Length: 341
Ligand code: GDP
Ligand code: CA
Image (cartoon, rainbow, N blue to C red; front, side, top):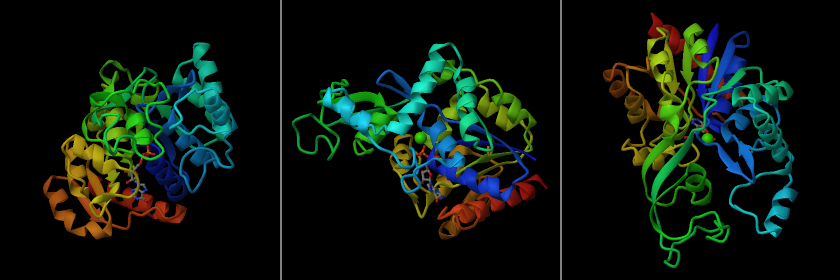
């Protein structure tokens, strides 16, 4: 069985670990979000690709869910001693090596898809990991920042405007997703989310082919706005999925009207979608989704999702461990069989 999974970071990676366990013989292709990518210290950082690679390759920090296990922060401390920011983005020493190798290869002319394949040679994630595009796409968020002197300026630990990264002054601004998410912890009002460059981007080699050859497409419980959204915004990908003629099944990242972790509710509000399992299903719509799993606490959402033309079931959706994630993946495979019939 050939399965294509669109994935962000933590939610995608943890689900994929379960899927590998539930379907050990499946041939899994992961189309990874690159809208979170950022250039820092001259290096290209791909947080979502790396979270998938480290998690499936057994090198991730388990409690945190991203970054490397047994990490130290000497390089970051040295950079800070030079006043080289931003301080708000945590890059560990082990992690730095990945970004150095990636940046070196990109500089030598290799596309990101080839670089990702090379990095995965080391990590052996057991899936084929392809970035959504080799072109540059960066998710930006239109926000209202507080005036620097006003109360409730920078959140605790956000380091004010000292890092010289251009964030001086309040008011209406468009900032990089990472600045919104990591520096401001999604605490400032957000009005729009734009995957800048997506409309000009081409799917990376292998993306459309994998979708065309798939028996099944899965949307893990990744962030619908800033993880799955940018992937679907690359021209051709949404259409290929909708036209593939195979079941497309998703799992809700919203449980009990709130994200399981992170601040997905804030970016859903920014695009005018309520933070409920049913509203996220409707946001994808029956043109894309054939099936949708909601958590048992959201069982009353099932009729609303079904009324939108999407097959829906309520099952436990908390990835407390790999077995729980594997049971979720098993339910998604079962729902796919049902909606196919
Ligand atoms: P990110 O790029 O690291 O933010 O990761 P993703 O976009 O792949 O996933 C983030 C989403 O995963 C968040 O919106 C969470 O609500 C969701 N999530 C995390 N853990 C769980 C879980 O155990 N169950 C469900 N249903 N969703 C989860
Ligand atoms: Ca992400």
